[in-house]
Image 1 (cartoon, rainbow, N blue to C red):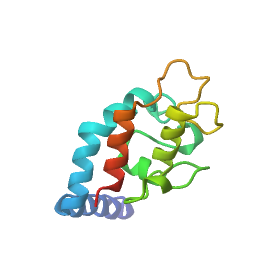
Image 2 (cartoon, rainbow, N blue to C red; image 1 turned 90 degrees about the horizontal axis):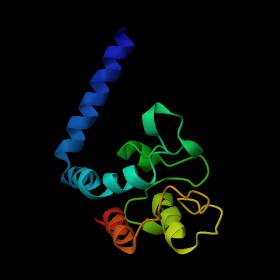
Image 3 (cartoon, helix red, strand yellow; image 1 turned 135 degrees about the horizontal axis):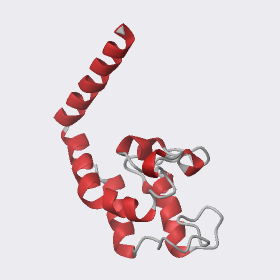
Image 4 (cartoon, helix red, strand yellow; image 1 turned 30 degrees about the vertical axis):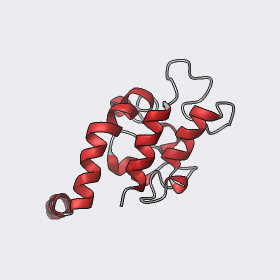
Length: 130
């Protein structure tokens, strides 16, 4: 019980600290407004919907899950560098090279369209913002 209490306190403290950091608050606001709706439409059904185990270990339902990334391609977000961020790289492949094995969404997925140029630009700007 003590462990659970300490863990809860740690989580609440981390959230409070993040809210006090203007950079983190701005990232979260942009995520909520511009990025999450795109991921919800294009990614979440395979990467974390309804409590199902996310494919490839990549959970696209939360900012923390996206930052962490999946099992194969490393960190989902490397702040300041979209090319090192698997979220951007694989989304870019999905829009420009659908035949690549790691393109997201995969070419065989007929239910999800690749990100548009505008969506990719917003994603890139969000990751690279300092």
